[in-house]
Length: 277
Length: 277
Image (cartoon, rainbow over all chains, first blue to last red; front, side, top):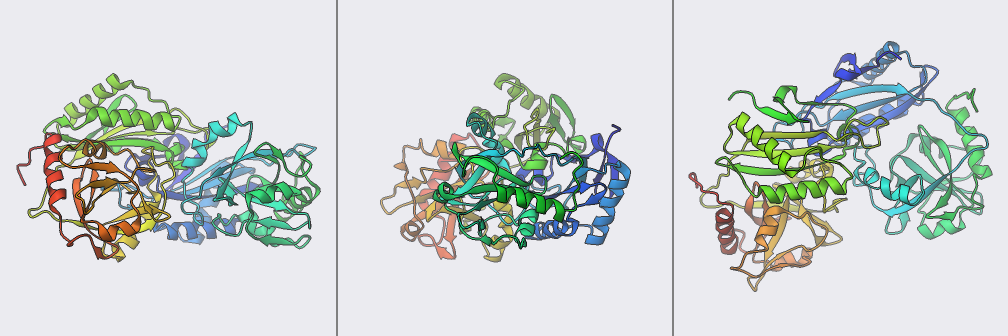
């Protein structure tokens, strides 16, 4: 594969030249926001939703975006034309910029990267295992670059034989570091935490599903024992079954029928055709 | 002033060339640690304490440091010789490194920057105003690069006519984003929060003061009304009076005698001679 290009502040440059000064506030103070979307057969999935959230995150963090939405879409398409990666992930990052005093916001740096990505599904569908951890993301409604706790916990997750961590705040479940969390209760209702979580794009789409009752409501840790099914959602994971939490099986410990139906539905909503499923 | 040099992974390079790839985990996920120390007349202040904390932070975040302590001290002195800045601040940063998948830790990047800094004191001594905000730093014992909440709050702090923010956790005071917090109670005891705070180097020195009783104990928000004095400590601030919190004066609303005595003591401990005080 030839070297990929990266968009940096209005230029398309080779990936190995895409760098930021060590005075950037992302490096000095972990200050920045981003969004991530999937491209399937040359089409960005839910582009508008991701860009709306990107501008929301930027404004909430007091960061100005040099490009308006139209210009940003043009930049994304220019990058896609340059890289010719019809199946890929696109990440749009906005940092705090070079800071004169190491603390004040500078002129934000806008970076767009593109890397190969393809949805793949095992048949039969596999589920993942989670551990729980008490932690409240500090700015839950903003897609900041802050994943310090999540990456810090990786050895703990691995030691537990799990795949990811599920955060809770005083026993009330919120989300995973990179995905939203759902359970299916005994009434076949789909429940997702209502507060202190990121407004996931896939989550928002799932809330519009008409085959099932989908509700935003608090989920306590003790509710997990009565859940029939559980799953997480994200742009890259779509709908991914959760089969065990803290070593205890969810339902019968296998991907459930509702989860699988929702996955199929989401695949259709996203206009994704799987040749490899 | 001629351009300053920066240490980046074993090289001394001009500051404008000191850059990291946009794939570094600091930029992608806000993942990194640092330490900061002051150089006075060519002497790094409490170098050993800062380096010990740096290695502690690195290990806690699963980041390896390419240099052992002796080699790191040599690198710092090489940089100081190159820059010839006898009064300065030195920042040692260790990032998560270039991450192949945007989430896993890579080979950490080690950066040492040096910038002019000089202690200055107004006479009479001035105090600062704080606002309080409920927030618990997510990894309080580690000096991570995460200041997202602190910088996010800057407009709120300015709108309140304050200088900085004091965090509390369910009404129990912890610290400011870049400094430790102390009060002087009616018994002339010095109290600083005992839990969930960064192990400040200046804080640790102050705990060794023998002129006063200095204790690590919980401080509740309501204790502020009875405080005779309050102050914050850090490597750059030494001992800085706090004269008001949430618009209410502390004590008589002016820098207090105990605070000023402790500042003088700390200046002596640090071996700092002020020609401009």
